[in-house]
Image (cartoon, rainbow, N blue to C red; front, side):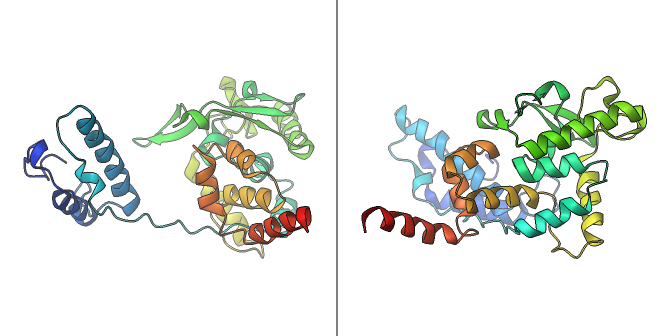
Length: 282
């Protein structure tokens, strides 16, 4: 970034310099020279720059923060395509005998991210108490699979399970133990809940591709595997579950993120709020 700013001193840095920087990053900001960065990434750069310059103001190095006066790119709200209740039920019924049935159940009932699901170990799941703990995530780093700590403090969380999900996990564990190393979930001493036939971790991309193949065969709206997380969130909010609880289950950094992401997808929330408030006083 410093090279793109032309070596400008801290005191000479102005909002126009930052605007020019952001435009360059959008058009040709990729390190490999293949194009520009997304608006979301450039906005993240702006957040970091703003914090750095805020500290510079606090330490008396500059009088005002030029990042507060510039025009960073707006973040585009990601398109969300969740299934409804009936569609989720139809899908789970259709894949009832699938070796990864428990993974699909967890994705819909808990809203865990793909990497969090694949990073689950049997030690992190307490079936008698109907709870699981998210403490790691399976990620792809330089074409290799690694177990990584959650990206934020809120991502490390305990999530309650319903009876149906506990039953699906119990059946999955039983089938894994009976089938041995040829069944997804046998773990091969890794302790992972979901594995390949040889006991090695399941590649995240193969989960998404397998999900896509399955819904191609079904008369269901085409969605991404990640949209099962959105499905979980929208179903929970539509059921009247408090947004704070939904946010905690999803591992969002704040309830604001949850509301900003999903409130427009669940338009009935406004009507329900109006009806409940009116019922209290009228």
